[in-house]
Length: 453
Image (cartoon, rainbow, N blue to C red; front, side):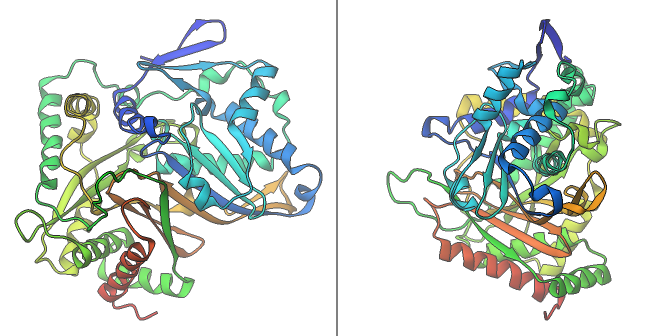
């Protein structure tokens, strides 16, 4: 169902089934003061010209309000069954800004390790490093959307528009619909949808017998903070890797995924059969599959993503794995996958609520990618078209709060450099071990492609 006004200034719609599913997974950790799978997008930036004049705090507050005006779903709140949005009065907007935007003297890594759940999207400015951290529950958006929101914040920061002059009250036209609504999926599954859902669910069986990393199994161990290992390859090394990928007719993502499989095998404990295969997630943004305007930046604060599981055998070569992943990524998503999104989430949610989990704990390094981040985050933003008044984005980072034994490799390309971020929970893994994993990924990538720089 679409958004509807329940009383003047109060808008509401039902939670979509995919939002509900991801929210259930995230909410499980609330008792510990954390949120599983919450997303952080970090942007480092510099200011020049008139952007350095006046109060930066005032500019940040104005930009944050403008971000809410342009993407009001960042200020929607979730109940057990509904999403709600309230058009703010002036004092409400100030209170919301005070609650959700903070300036903090710490490092981005320490901030992320100590993040708490929030009813809204939250923003943090780190003045000593000139970084902005955007934090959100995963049910509200995905990796692509988080970076689009970060970019929208930077656009708002260089804007001449005063947030108090915005046409508050018309935000409902920009509130995002659920993926089920966008895909126009019926509430009652048809036989075709039932069959497509059954096919999608099959890939979940591939986790049985899959390998994983050795982790801290001390009795009473509970999750702590999410930490990460960043790795930025030089422009020279990136150029060599991209050239070698092109000559082999494979995508950089396929090459990275194959390298991740190699690193998992090199550091794993065996599966139950004594050998084990590597199972990981094939993640896809649904945005390219959506009709206009739902495939646009306007819908950044929306959960439009999907995935299935795929496995590769221990006996496969790097080249065979790269070719397999390349074929799967190139194939993309079919009609059956798209029409099953509602019913798939319904059945997974029912299983989670019944059993509390989807199976035994997994401890492999999985993968998530947004590929070309330059398409999502503009490197330079100019105020009023003036070249001298600029905000330059010097670095970006993307991560997922990880409270399980499973870890995640994030991969993207920005400013002509390949970037990696390997996230893990510090309760289960040591930094030195995860650095070895990152080294193994980079080594396998360069070795597999024959890159020497």
